[in-house]
Length: 292
Image: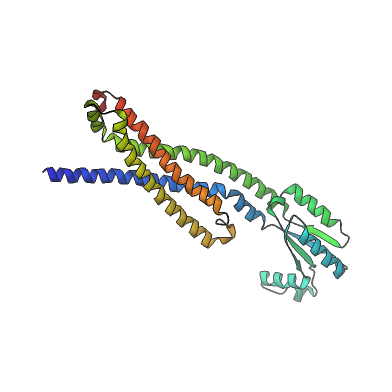
């Protein structure tokens, strides 16, 4: 009978520890993913901004020397990521592939113009700066037109600001929820041992002596939960980097090291603080209050 009861108590204890580790690892993993998103918000926004292209259309009478000089000056400009010359023949061929037929057959001529496609650095993709860049390029006498998607630029910048704000708000809310969830799991675990705590206190054990094994146990559970969370976070990071290498999430190892260290320290810190206050609460209760 006693062995059966011991096995039951052991299973109950393991189940309690498992729930604590699971809650810590799950919450820290989600918090780590959110942290990864926060740290890379600008990088991801810059990636989308750098897909914006300015097309500089050239007049038919533009000299090749002038075109080469313009391409070189654009390529060397601080706002330029790349500058690629596209002849009217190349543009016609690409357009024919896109529409599935050769439009020159029924037009009888090629209406397209030679152009230079300029991809910008992300810091310069704002409506005001693009307007200034377009005016500067348009001032060249052999430039026919400078074209870019103005509504898309405005929409992109507005959405980046909104998304960044909501990510910060969500981070704060989720951090608060994470602390509450981990704290609740640890408190429930200690609640099941409230009579043991009070018994030890009644036979003369000091509060420090009673708290020590609970803190040590939950500290180990916090470390285990943190390690599991970091392993899952590493798997997600590997998957994203493998499928979307253009985002460059692993280009800055210092940021990743700070993120993983923060997850680890947060797991230990929350476990330590939650265990301290949970045991303190039951130590301060009167014996008759333990039943409520």
